[in-house]
Length: 343
Image 1: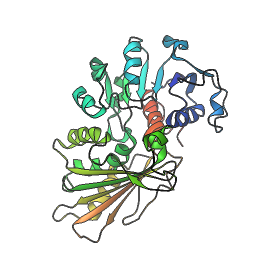
Image 2: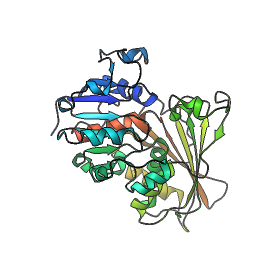
Image 3: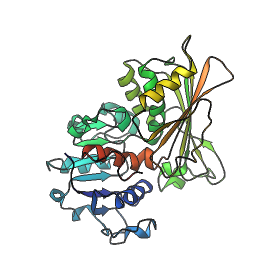
C-alpha cells in the first residue's frame, strides 16, 4: 500500500543532521512537515538556519505544541536518551511511527546501552518494537515495526563494505583494522566543546581509540550476521572538513581467495541497490563523489602484502550516514519508491 502524503514532525530540527533532514523532506513529494521542534529559537523560521530551505514550513516550536494523533511519523534527531523519553510517552498512538537517529534503540541489550552510553535505558519494554535498519542489509519487513533505529554514520560505511563478505566468509574475521576519517559535522553543533584545544580547523586527530561508542552496534551486527565474533581494531579520526566519511578497512584473505571473488560478491550483493556503487578493482576513492548524496562508494584494492586487501568505503555522514538513510527507511515503511526524494 502506498500512502498519499504523510504528516511528519522533526524533533531536533536545528542540529546539523536535523537541518539536513528538514531540507531533504521539504523537497520530498510525499512528506508534509507539520512540526519542527527544538529547545531554542522558538518561533523562528527554519530557513534562518539553512538558506537552502525554500519551502514554507512551520515555525520552530516546543514539543507541547504537537497534536500527536494527527501525525503519521516522527523523526527524532536528539542527544542520546532524548528519544526514549518521547517515544515512551507517545507509543500509545496507534498510527504513529518513529525514526530515531540517536543510539537509543540501536542496541538490543539494555545492559550494553548502559555500559557504552553511561545511561539507564528508560524504555526497555519498547526494544521489541524496534529494528536496527541499514536498508540494504535488512529485509523489507521493517514495515512491521513502530520504531526504526537509524545506524551510526561510521557503522554505516563499515557494515555496507564488510557484511556481504562476512556472510560468505570470504576473509578471516580477525586482525581486521578499520581506519575511519570523518568531517567534524559528525560531532554535532557543539563539536568545539567536545574537541577543545584540538585546533580542529588545521589538524587531523584520533579519538575514541579503545572504546568508541559505535563499536557496540558493530559488535552486535557483526555477530548477528556471522553467528560468531569478529575481531577488529577501530580507529576514528576527525579531519578539517565539514562532512564526509572515508573508512579504510584492512582484511586478511583466506587461503586461495582472490580479490576478484570479493569484488564480484559485492557487485552481486548490491546489484539491485541504486545507492551502493561498487567501483572497479584497485580504484582509490575519496569522499568527493558522495558529498550531498545518499550514495556509498566501495572499492576493493590490493596492498603490498599479498595476504591482505584494503576496502575503501565513502559516504556523506549527514546523508547516507544519517538523514538520507532515515528517509530511505521512511520510503520503505510507507511503500514509496526507495529512492524518492533522494535522487
